[in-house]
Image 1: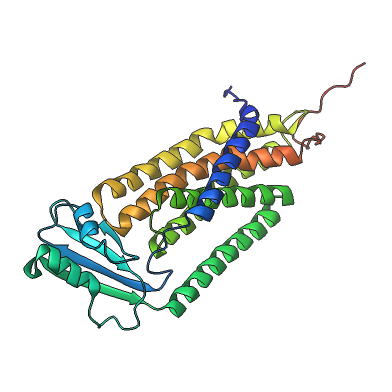
Image 2: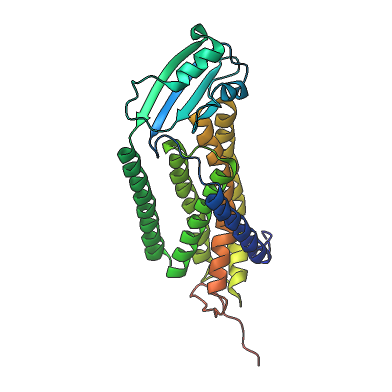
Amino acid sequence: MKKIYNFSKGFLPCAILSAVIILSGIASLVFRGINLGIDFKSGQIEEVKIAGASSVDSVRDALSGISGVSVKAVGGEGENLFQIRTGSKEDVSENNEVEVALKKTFGADSVQVMKTDFIAAQMSQTLALQSVALLLGTMLLIWLYATVRFHWDFALGSIVALLHDICIMFTFFSWTQLEFSTTTLAAVLTLVGYSINATVVILDRIRYNLPLMEVHEFKQLINKSLSDTLSRSIITTVTTLFAVISLYVFTEGSIKDFALAMIVGLISGCYSSIFISSGLISFIRRNWKPEYGIHSTAPKKNA
């Protein structure tokens, strides 16, 4: 007989832990905000190759006299390729302060602009609104699907798990100041799919076990269902993590950011499917009374 783990003991501690992390994320969002990429706010972004730059700090020092400039390395070791982002400009063809400052410090022959992008405020606002609408629409469809296939409280548990994962992701973005771009948004949407898939497998097992088990508390049913699907949940997450970690180790730039966001989201998705979604359903059905199905044998009454 397969061992049944008492997952229900971890529901309350995990809920408290998640609440603390999310509240710290809200505080971080208020005081630090999110490092929005060029896709979500107006501005100019350049990729510059600087032969004489020994580190990111040396480039930052060269641009210290210009406000609103952020610098990060985007190339491999020894490539001396940097991404430099500045505030919005009405005309990107005008004399570039960044280029002037870099050439003054490192020499005109050492600075080569590889790529320049500019996005206007109206475009960035439209993209942000479309991204929010896409995320809300996705969650609405998932809620409808879970309600039709399972039950309203199962659907609520799956949506709360998704909201939990999204909050954890944005907490991570705010803590680390990882650039939030269309690439990292794609990671968030991808993880919504992974998370709901993991949750649906567990909910389906709960529904399957419901008429078959002779239990007196709903948490016993959840413990059995989670134990049945535990190996599947872990193996699916770990095998996907292998691929994502490989992306993180062997790539650079936006793909590396995508992989890092995926790593955090996959761990959060597995955790929320087991403890957050199931814990909420167990709380809602805390006064549940067993109804034995046609395939089960009801307990014998006392003589």
